Length: 171
Image (cartoon, rainbow, N blue to C red; front, side, top):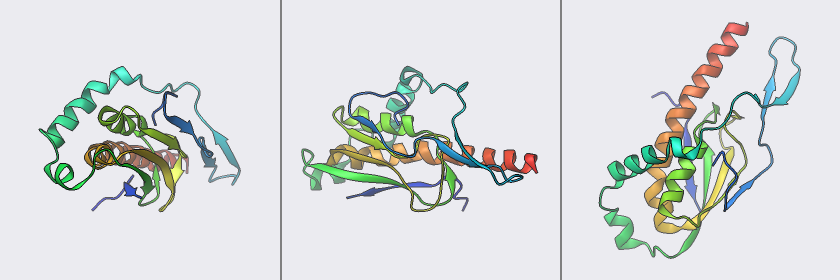
C-alpha cells in the first residue's frame, strides 16, 4: 500500500489563526538543496492558505457521509463531555498538507477545540513527527478522526508525490 503522506492520530491547521489555535515551533518547512547541500527555512509568500469558506461545506458533507446519524459506539461507550488530548503523528516521511481542512472537521464537532500546530502545510516530516496536538471533547475527537485523517492523508500524499517530482526534476 502506498503510504505517501500518511498521518495518524494518536489519542492520549487551521491555516488561519483563530480561537483555540496556537502556533508551535517548526512552522516553516526546512528545505535542503540536494545539489549544494545548503539548508534554508522558507515559505513561499505567493501561496495563500484557502479561506475556510472554500472547504467548510466539503468537510460538513464528508462528516455527514462518514458519520451519518452518529457514531453509535462512541455515543454508547464514551463520556462525550470528557476532555481528551490527541496527537497527529506522521507515519512515514511526508510533506504535510490539508491540516487546516482536518482541523475544520474537528472544529465542526467541537467549536471549543484547542489545536497546537507544530508543523504547517509544506513541512517535510519524518516518521513519528508530532504534526499537531488537539484537545477537546472525547466524542468530537473520536468521531472526527477518520474524516480529518482522510483529508490529511490524501492531500499529504499528493504534496509528497509532488515534492518527489520537483526533486527529480532538479537533478
